[in-house]
Image 1 (tube, rainbow, N blue to C red):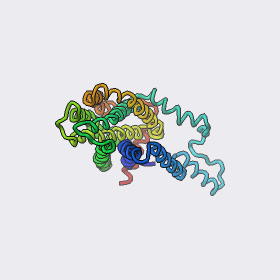
Image 2 (image 1 turned 135 degrees about the horizontal axis):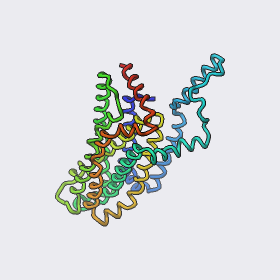
Image 3 (image 1 turned 135 degrees about the vertical axis):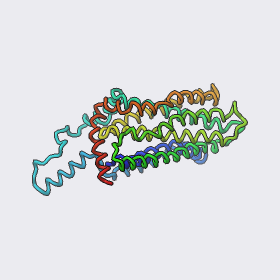
Image 4 (image 1 turned 45 degrees about the horizontal axis):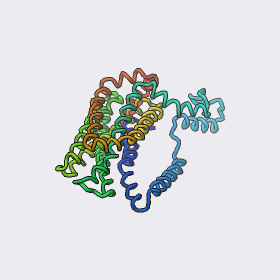
Length: 342
């Protein structure tokens, strides 16, 4: 539906909207809870989700096979040639079994059998687990002396994360520049060409966590609160880049199987986001905010080098995947298509 250049912005919009929800959700829920009660957090969420579900009914079809079926059906009606069939006509018709296989089991199969999807899923899960673990601490940190924020005001610390997420548009501008440069020089565009910013985001996550860990109470009381916000901005930048790069890399690498690859990554990310908060509150109250955040920072530091593994071995892993390898020809055709649009 979109070529590689357009997917830069499509995937960015997809990721930034989800990430802003993570940053802004605690703010609105805190103020709603204090003003009209916690039940209204769920009432408002239900209303928004209900309206979104209704809007989804009016989204146009974008599946290539379905669009081809519609074109062939129209041609048959106009020409009377009933023998005309689309190229995928021999494939199994959609049934409950095929739906379950494609929508439910294929992502799981990707996760346990495809090394590249597994690697992306683990990275995304760890990054999100660290972030969700950190968010448990913000209220504890900013309501403590010497900051002494109110309960409502402490939630505004999430604005710093949102600012970092918005700053992540700068690497996307650079990505668009690289793609245009490749088109002019007729160089082949590979999924690895998109992960340059990942080499900045992964270390930034670790640095941001270390900075936040040692600019907050109780062990550090002489540093003003805006300094700790710098660490949160870096964390927000890294958070959005992790999602963008890993989702975009999977989309470019797996072509028609991209939805299954992205679903596998989303599954592990969601599980990590659900599990980490179960123990991080106890960790922060038991170890203290400084040491607990340092634990998260140490984990992030272990994975700061992973972008260079993608740059060095990503193409080899793609070639070993029977799903991604089939998309090599599609990547070449897309590059030719982009040259033709010059």
